[in-house]
Length: 324
Picture: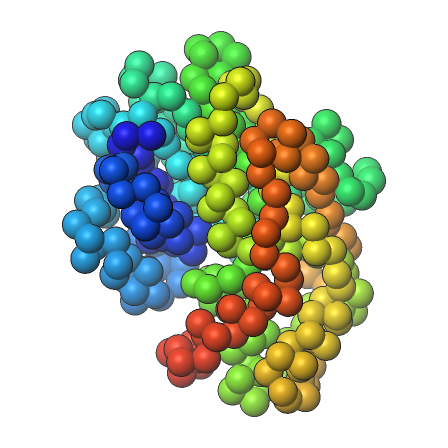
């Protein structure tokens, strides 16, 4: 890697990846792009970029669909495609066109530009375990049939298919990583752990959709960042490859509440609501393929990761009071 492009650089994972590269790969030039949508407050994205901007990282405030991608990719050999419209629950109804725009059309435009840029050595795409929906088995393998149960999952799978198509038809060197519930410092305010921890610290009840017996496979953000770099630098990986990136910590949401009570030292009140359409009962992926082909394995345990997220969020919880 000599010059990398991070799409969605102002987001949770994109900004963490940027800082990781800055600290550990100082010879690598970083350029970023983010459309700064208002899905959550722009002040959070501004804060995410503070270290990168102070270091002089070039950040473009543009939409991938309309940006001059040919100029943006000049000299770039590696693309970390983290940009996309997140959120399972918000993907239903009238906002679906936003998901089409940011998850599918933006990806297609990026792939077209990459196809025309012979310097590109690897595109690493941030896919999601949401592509599996209610999976056929656990731990789920990359070869198991995807069957998403939300519009969000459909768009992530569609973009993943585009990655495969451009690899097989035009030789674009793509790799897709299916993230399993990423958590840690900078997690978005709409995501579960940020909501749970913030409300617990503020002494408020936590809103829970469903029984709490739903099981999730949680992956710490630093492990996801390392997976991206492994995917970008591994040799012998075929274009169009897909890998699960799973922390291996498949636990119930109710178990998470118990862990948080212990770490924060308080009793958590829970307001229970009906399950939301598009939420699955369970996620759990096998990372054996990533271990074999990328040399990647998760390093941060669920308990350690939760403690680090709590430590990060505690001094900032006041700014999240109106968001959670």
